[in-house]
Length: 224
Ligand code: DC
Image (cartoon, rainbow, N blue to C red; front, side, top):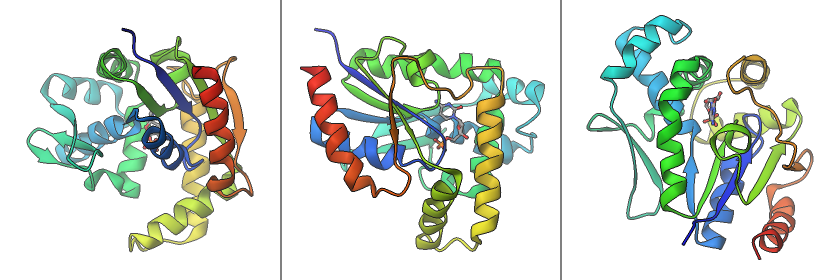
């Protein structure tokens, strides 16, 4: 029997992971966070002292890196770099930046593509990223493009970082959000863009709670 897949794309901080996690729990699907894979590679580059923006340098790391993803008893996705569980370590602003930089290199995208497609071949998945509906799973059963203004997304990310005790200020977060948007959308390799057949959901000004029920309803109709 074929497995079902739901693609959730959009810029950083739009609420993709929160939304996708909840939808996955409701539908009994596996939630796959593809950004975490790029983050793990970004962390590896930083650890090795390789500039994440250096295409040749990062490509040279690919044969050496061991990235694995696993689902713990909690049902949550854990990332491993070699033997080390880096699930928490990949959530810093420095790694966000490095992930966005390594993800611009075509060799990196090609290298990580199969890992993502493999997950969808073996499970019902709800996968979040930037190019899931356009490149990774162009035949996904449902495609969603989740977005919000940069200011709204920066506010959410700022609150998240504060909760985690990270010392930062709103203006810095906003600047980083805009910078990451430009890089993720402006790159030549699989840029962030909405697939033509993706449902556009703008969460600006809404709580994710408000968008959630409507989205769940639409997905159920599409999957039926
Ligand atoms: O979703 P995230 O913020 O954890 O992703 C980190 C970076 O990885 C993001 O800036 C762009 C990149 N990324 C990507 O290029 N393609 C994906 N499918 C997922 C993430």
